[in-house]
Image (cartoon, rainbow, N blue to C red; front, side, top):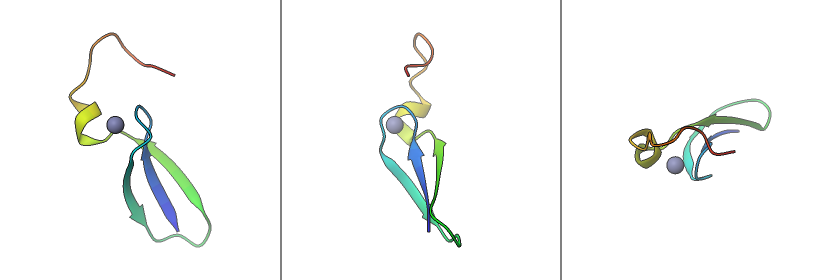
Length: 41
Ligand SMILES: [Zn+2]
């Protein structure tokens, strides 16, 4: 099973079917609108 995780706040955004365990990074709804100051890592 794959998981999509917000790269900014680590919230789980979605799951998808996959043969192995996979984690992809994206942005959740909150963080998508938060564009102040660039990336936090
Ligand atoms: Zn987020």
